[in-house]
Length: 543
Image (cartoon, rainbow, N blue to C red; front, side):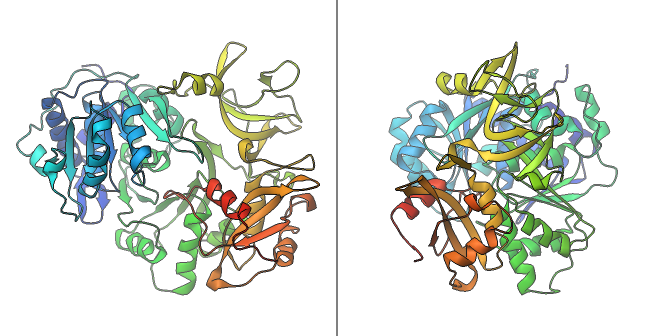
């Protein structure tokens, strides 16, 4: 049977090559490559027995656990489409994703049986439920669910499945900061090359044919941990990168990011790599080390990478002090784009969040003005964009698809929404941040992420978000919502003084609000909607 750039095909080839090697650790769950493959195969057979077929959509509604990845692989094996469900959704949000995604089955934590029961009538096509034990005792019969272990018991471990395809879909629902979530439709070949380096994350040489995946297997495997929930793309991509390279993947089984718990896991498993999402995860990790000097042997760590949120220079520098021989990198990307490169470390004096090298598939697209849309000329500003291996669009949303995926001179480009400037040399791009969050103050454009990065250099600021609040003269002004270490009281003048060390005067906050905690999504991404409402309601205003 012909092999394809299909995640199931690729994983099966790796599992056959190194069956006894450690593959996955999540709390008490441990499996080698063969065990992970066989349990996924058994679940795939169970789903098939319930009428789940190629193209059907299956929800994954649980916290991090081994069964999450087993469920994903099971779907890929039978060409079904896994759908990530944010475990924080309830009511209308949950009903929306179940119905918008056209789900016919759901693998869920037992905890969520009441939530599913509340909205089940609104999703009549959703008929098959498989429940993963998670310490809760809700009645399975309330939704007609079957215990996970009972479902796979006695199922065959033989891979008697139909041939798969490069174009089999993985749909990743991304919530953003406003509105309902959108389902990004990724053909598996595209996501393999766009988000997983085509198998060459550690060798630097992408696969030319599917069978090349076995050549990517590390002779001396490393161990890495993804700290964000698997329901978010960054962790799922990292999981696949590690497993398809024959490495040991460890998941954060705890609910939330507790620095001491994470370092306990890193030390116990002798992990080499950490994948975080910006300062929201960097800060508790660094604080735990500062508060527990010498507690852990972390000599195994040689790589700490971030993506998906601001990873400030200040926090990168703190990691470099703690791990002087460690590779620290800050990558750019999104649910729609996959990996779009890492900050080159150049042209920091130009401002922005980082600098990316231009390529045939990575560019700045000008969408406004004369001759738009077109590729930017040196010195011009536009939208950071990607072509080549990109998604098909958004599931059930042709309008948003048409707005985000555009034709420029016969090539389709994905507009990430991040504003960028083509440098004068025409060879690299400086990334500034999400244009939709841009603050216009007296005609000056100010990107919140850049201001946040500057403020986080202050030693007493634990976390912060920057939003616009109304200003009688300038239309909008920069407002900072911060939380501090130990309840430290800071004045507006103090944070302005720190900010001026790093950014131009017109970008400095004119208003300060202090909150007990800055709200973020479970993966560390900012909740700007909350921050704006907090600031506009004058909560925590510092006079």
